[in-house]
Length: 253
Image 1: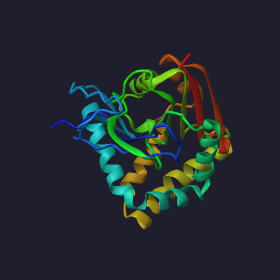
Image 2 (image 1 turned 120 degrees about the vertical axis):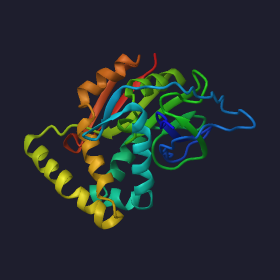
Image 3 (image 1 turned 120 degrees about the horizontal axis):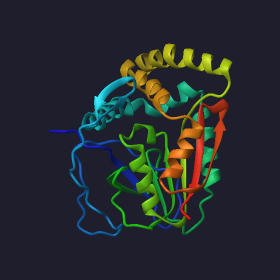
């Protein structure tokens, strides 16, 4: 059976605010609701046969969802510990900055895809979100969009479910802008991170995929253009920690 595209477990924040919710790829699962309080749409089963990347490996688009799922299944138990070890805790500052930019207030309708904690879980697909049009004030995704098979489709879905005036925010690994730091960062990424993965999580391959997937993700300016192509306006980005990560922002106007 073919692996799904980008099935994800998402959290719906409703009419209040809480810390960022978690999403993870889960192949083969679909929605099952007795009621439909969130305006759930059921996903199609269309097949794709094109090739894409899984780190530095070339795979079919049908395979990628299952492979990403296996990565996160493998690393889940040590996920937070590894994040602290790999970034020396700096990832917490990056996420705090994302929340500061978000500045949610009581009554905000917020959808977060791919990371953290939250209130109401919904199993969905980042490329075919199970929500009605014009539903949310803010859409956030942190360290997740590089793992979807079709980034452009995920962005179009983000645009669709946002209300007019709604805001898109993405925190993701990006391109280091200092040549010296870039060389040191590459050395650390390829020589140290997989070793940490093996020692702490017992998983070299998943963390090798992590560092490879970061290099496959478009740099800041290119990703900005991709976001604009999805229909967002006033798109900006801020590079953090010399460009190791960046926060991109856009509005549905």
